[in-house]
Image (cartoon, rainbow, N blue to C red; front, side):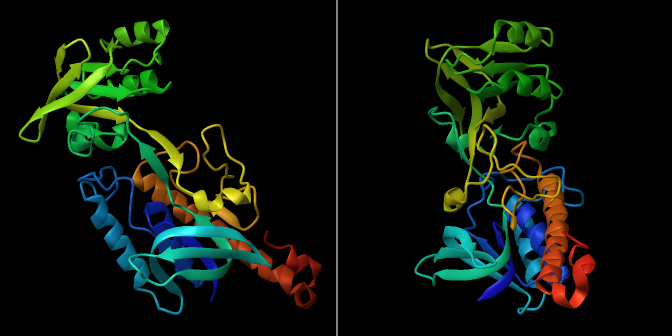
Length: 323
């Protein structure tokens, strides 16, 4: 079955794009595994008119809005995974494996929007996962306000941890950076953090401690216990798009897909939006906005493609009116 656009991923970027595409009367198929990276998060923040809403509820509302358009113009498919994305004649072939014994999908589309987001790996620290999404978070802009003035931990083993600490210091004056034994904070950065009364703890972490599902602190390798009531962790992120590696899309040093201002990748007809494009993880409202921007570009590009296909009827000037 042929579509104008296949959207891979039904997060805020993918759903926003799908909504705008179907409103442009583009025949659109949305493929999603329903395994969002923020599944552990209880509330999402900073989304105008939806502040504090559970992320899964935000996604449900988005799916319902898109699905409210005629069946002939939009389709949804819950899939275990997209298995292949490749060129096919004048468009692209997309294959996906059905979930729980469901049917597999193989479709052809004129354009594809990649919006599957990122896969994340947390630092290997005992008892970190049970507090992730409740007491420990990854998005400072999303959850910083709710942790205002609390004794916080910032846990990370990446080179940007000092920069993130300066940002988090806006919300709490009692902040300790835990590098878990990784040498990722330079002496100069530590001195800069000290001017904001932010401490750096370089010893390895044994575990995150708590009582009755409430985080109480951080236990270090030398037996020292540091009381903390919550904080933030810096995961390692990588694009969740094994299905598209054969395309050879241009990426940055972090593996994020390089796009222009309209979301076009290095391959004509393939677009990307959301966390898997630089600068990486963003607030939900930012991802939704990018989805709408990319949808507008896709629609314009498809008009240009249609004009070129029928150039004989429109003339050379008309064929080049839109990219």
